[in-house]
Length: 120
Image 1 (cartoon, rainbow, N blue to C red):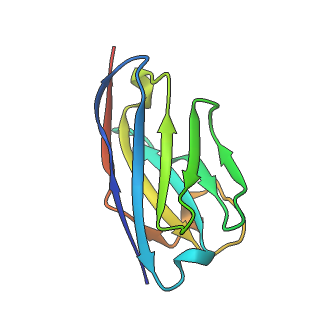
Image 2 (image 1 turned 30 degrees about the vertical axis):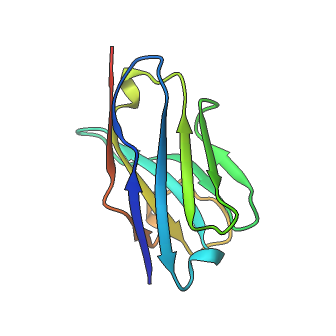
């Protein structure tokens, strides 16, 4: 079982930055692929960034950077040059597959989400 807790969301003006954190625990966490997804009101959940156990990363935009601490206890999402369209609930996810998937259905564990609001 993997437990994920997100933090770091909030209200920011367009052009600003936020750093989201995902505190992870659980027996299988260290071999999981981690991902960040976001969901805007009325829209489907979409991929933001992912990182494999070996450190390979992928993000939907150059403004977003995913990283993790050395112990793989915390995964971060650094978001720069934020835009109003980046507004939504951001979720941390863990998946057993050894590759980064942009499909939210390929992830097995989810956090509760953290709200990000970007004002214009």
